[in-house]
Image 1 (tube, rainbow, N blue to C red):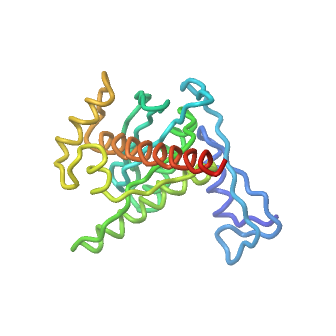
Image 2 (cartoon, helix red, strand yellow; image 1 turned 45 degrees about the vertical axis):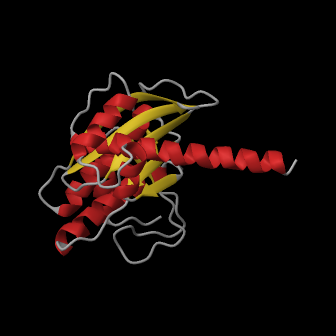
Length: 225
């Protein structure tokens, strides 16, 4: 395998952190031209602190994308019961866009390593009048989708209004209302900020729709004998 000098520097840098990357490939020059059959895999060197997921439960990672602050929240769902496991904010570091995205990738990967979610959910991006801002948000959202996808998780995507409608009951609810309902449904939770609260709301929304789909599928199986 032929790896260019910039690519080697990049992967040497990643190897120093908690997450190590490997590139099993036939023909590759990562920062060069083409790289057919490239498959990027990652594993975690960091010890997990989250408890083992029960056979009947589901652990959901909710992500609120943002280039400056990316909120995350993890809940465990068992039937109709939800339990808070953790929440926080990944803050991008670095002067240029590439380094900021890389820092978000590494921090979010650490979250996956620690809590070992079984599924993930990401808020959809809506286009507003600020085209440049929307583009940057879309790039951060790419990281939010990439990290759980690299871990092999199924990812749900939900519009902001759908999340608010599910959690609060009103599609145009204010952030304060979302935070209030998150605290109400996850007793004892200490929110690490509005972005983390939104991420927990996204996780709760995903749990609701995943649970509804599961009930519907079981009903169909029973009806079909």
